[in-house]
Image (cartoon, rainbow, N blue to C red; front, side, top):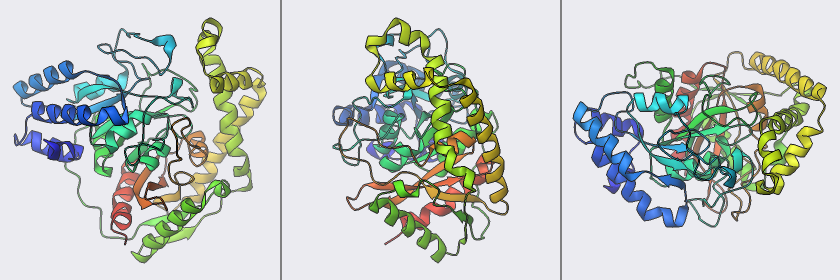
Length: 429
């Protein structure tokens, strides 16, 4: 059973489709792993053992149809599920039951996924953490806001889980926990049923154990047929090395890991080109903060008015900033984002992706904060697809990922680049 719990989603789907494994056996393996590890990791807000087993048995009776037929799935708890509580990481919504599934959950269920339950999120997917610990070292944060999803995938509880990103809530926890994550192009998947925080930035994504798993879920979210992924053509990766204006935020371990990754890619034959961002990029980080604060203040106005005492100090501070931000500043920030996206796309001509830092370094010690999203904010602002590629480690032996930033709407090509890069890092001495 533990061997099943360590399989990738693609491996599970193949075994399920060929009747080498039943959906019920896969669900039971996931539940066994959750029962074993949840007391230490606290990845789950709610586990639906009975519902998961019932769904799995029904899939077995029908022959495990669908792209995700029988694959266990975690759902971040800001994403609505009609049959499970959805609490948004806030005591305001304790026990709340939506009337319908979110659009992404509907698509996943239609593709045959077995929803195991709801994974822990930070408060409204902002910075106030829940109880989740990093499986690589429980004394360290797993990152946020997709804390539970990253930890559940990293610890073998589920092979794939939904998350969201408004600043760095997919890429950062994936880097800290040593798993893959895809933040698709802005707007690729409809967000109906996901609690809005900053609609100009909010993006649904997912975390998994391989780049092929990310592609499997992308196909399910697009509603297209899934075929076994073929090896990429034997040619060198074409990567733009971009240390970004935020490079001074990287710690010594983060700098060393990034430079090691660049060295390994070059030694393996990757075509590397240094890319410098335009001077205007110095303003992108603050533009993202402006957009997020201005929009969050309006999206959470009802909660702020009705339940101010149940909001964290960090969220109060953000909403206060947003309420005092002029609308003209919000418009200018969005205009800067549009110009920036065009500029980066021009810089990426002839490249498969930009290679940039994913996080400042290893996961910080302690569970009172979730780390700094500094290396993801600008790419979220620009709406470009990003993927975390694990494989490197810092001085404490904790994971540090590399981030690939791709062309808008070209997630498949970006994931192919991630699949090609990962073995170079994983097999490093």
